[in-house]
Image (cartoon, rainbow, N blue to C red; front, side, top):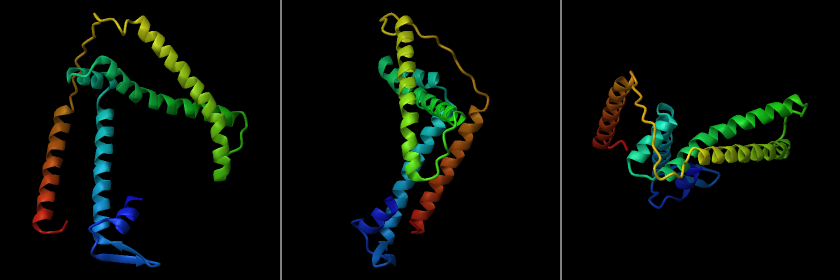
Length: 186
């Protein structure tokens, strides 16, 4: 979508790259769209890498240490916990419906019709789990002003290697960017 919109309507379009049925795509717009897409991809991949390499409790600890209130940290980290839980629940519900004999969906209309029977149990199960989590937090004294936090220090053996690898990759990417700027490639 970005390629089409920027390729057609970017304000600095000058160099015609190609034309399809009278619709003209420009080099500057497509390069700008690829740059934006690359930036979004880097953000998504970096966030995914961060979430995969650190546990939710470590992320919460780091966010609290950076000055966020523990309630805000809980809201952010609960989203990281709830989304995979919703996906697991959805797969369980779909498997249960297949076992009960629902037809495999063939057309897009059949797929849209099959969403509602999955969505209702999914919402109910998610709300039930949220209520149980809320009760658990109340029983553990989440709002207690004198609460204490268990401090567990995780030591990873491969962290140094990963840091060196990422530093090396960053140096290569920065060098590549400087080289392309000097040679006028992008």
